[in-house]
Amino acid sequence: MAGRIPQAFIDELLERTDIVEVVRRRVSLKKAGSEYAACCPFHGEKTPSFYVSPQKQFYHCFGCGVHGTAIGFLMDYENLSFPEAVEQLAEQAGLEVPRENDDGPRQDTTGPLYAALEAAADYYVRQLRETPRAVDYLKNRGIDGSTARDFRLGWAPKSGLLQTLSERFSPQQLVDAGLAARRDNGDLRERFRARIMFPIRDRRGRVTGFGGRLIDDGEPKYLNSPESTVFHKGQTIYGLFEARRAQTRLDHLVVVEGYMDVVALARSGYHQAVACMGTALGRSHFDVLFRQVGHLTLCFDGDAAGRRAASRALEQALPVMQGMREVRFLFLPEGDDPDSLVRREGLAAWERLLEQALPLSEALVRLLREEHPTETAEGRTHFAHAAVRRIATARDPLFRELLCERVAEESHLPRERLEEQLQAAASADAGSARGPGPASGANAPPAHDPEMTARPPAGTPSRSEPAGAGGRRSSSLWAALLARILQHPELDWDTPALRELAAASGEASGTLGRLLEALGEQPRPDTARLLERFREHPRFERLLSLASAELHDGEHGMTRQVALDAADQLLRRHCRERMRELTASGSLDTEQRDELARLTSILQG
Image 1: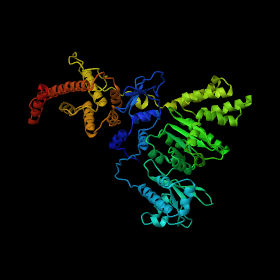
Image 2: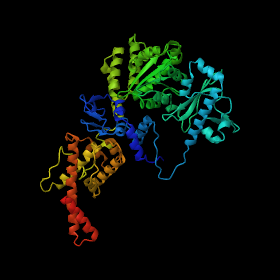
Image 3: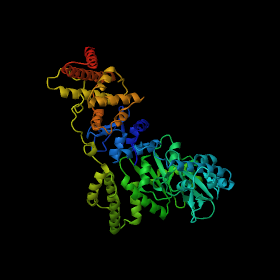
Image 4: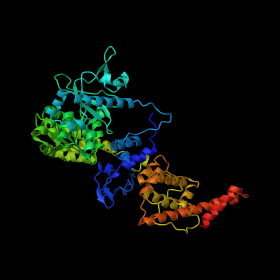
């Protein structure tokens, strides 16, 4: 069973993650002073009340109260568990999530596979340099040496790999890595022979598998690595590592059919093309792609097979369309592929063609209209029924409504009639698409906490409260102090009074101590990283509320002063209570007398 994710890794991940970019891929943000604003994705509204702070790396909605870090946003928006959200952010950052194992160190079973695949890639590259006919093939396809180097293209001879790697890796490791297969008699044979080799790399640049292309007659023309511990065809995107490395800011990807299309487009100067691993574009591919960008263009051949592939892709895309995601469909001239088109007409022609790609809504209408012509009443009826079946799978209510409007226009039917057909499915899908609401499930308000539940005051709490209000006053003081530390971790909080207060007994003092410890460990602390230290704390939700509370302090100097005044009052209260405990016990030992003297000194200071 997977162990815990180390806190140090969470800190590093959040330091590398920009919450503005995470939210912007899913929600339309507009600059609003030092923050970004949008209509809240968690409740219906017409006026923006959802704000994202790049300084705090925190989001908050003043309408429904939802708030949190980049991790929390993914958990709420995409209905992910905490480990799933961390995995998604780590993938975007090019990091591997480490795990702590309470049962002692686990044997690394994937390390040898990655090493074997890396050694094989190096071997294939060397073999390409020594094989003129393979080099000539690539040159004839317009691939120069620089592009071959960037994609680590290689050549697999008919034999030699197993002999080269046998001294470093066992036969079983070579089989597990997908580099070798067993014959019926148990002997090994090389999986890839006499093929141009395309290494497939993950987000971190590690080789996870290969695609091989024959340059002579034979079948299969393309051969991929088999499924393995490190290689999964249904979740693998060829060229994604290379695209991210070539682009400073990657906001759009074009999905083409094959490896050679990706490489040829890169050779022409277009570095935003990727390809699936010889399989139909599926839901898991969309999940991987939308973790990287919000806009996709799917490229298909213009023949009947291409239109069938487009129809299947459209069915897979509809359920994942939400927020700011966009999918467009590009149908190439019949007989062309990106490789042939860009070699014949150049990069400018390719980019002009991309501008003509159809939005998903128009592709839906065009594909259904080809199958069910709308010139007759019967055809329009069949068209509408087929459209409703597909639209019902869309999870985004707004997108469903707009699709209904477009289909109504094409079928000459009232939109209300189409919406009647969708009503039951829409009601069921709306709940699953949105996930748990901000005030239910894991986000429900915490139980009463006598030290941390009061709303933070706008300014310094009063020193002269009526008798009997001591508990409420302590709550307000603690809220005032903790809210300001959470919201302004960049200020200097290393003071004797705060250290003394953190050493006192009580849950709030313990929370303060953990905050001060975290501040000391982080050279550039922010609100998000502080909060993630407390995700399993019973008062985590309360701390989230404090992190988003309005303070009305004005300049930072006042913020720190308000907090320190609150800390001073809490410390004095603690000292008086502790002195009463000590004096009530009668005779004091040496240690207790020293403590009493120290407490007296604090009160007189």
